Length: 132
Image 1 (cartoon, rainbow, N blue to C red):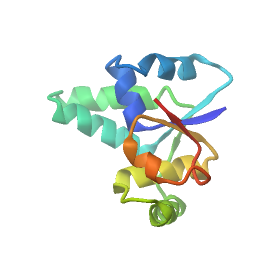
Image 2 (cartoon, helix red, strand yellow):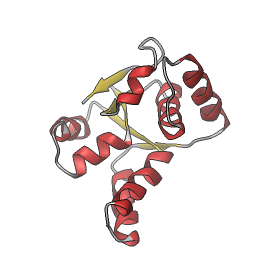
Image 3 (cartoon, rainbow, N blue to C red):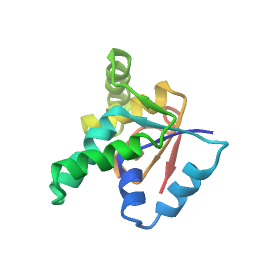
């Protein structure tokens, strides 16, 4: 299965919160292809920094998670337009970073693994999701 890990999935895995064990199972299963959106690398590091981690530690932790993935999906023009489309079709406003992450999953034909209520606003026929 192709899975794109949202920043929320990375954070619950890192902090060993409820659902983190499921993320670990996804990562450990060789049948899965794990992807991360490039914007999640910045968002993960930023979140750690806001929580008091030193900039260098936040950077290295975020990059180590990026290296767990078979691929990092860039935010390019196609992703930007798909984010716009998903946002336009959603039942409520979605933060830009989340829309970009959802777009990366959509364009990669990946299932988005997350624990973020914003993604529930995107119609299920437009985005496959695993809610943690």
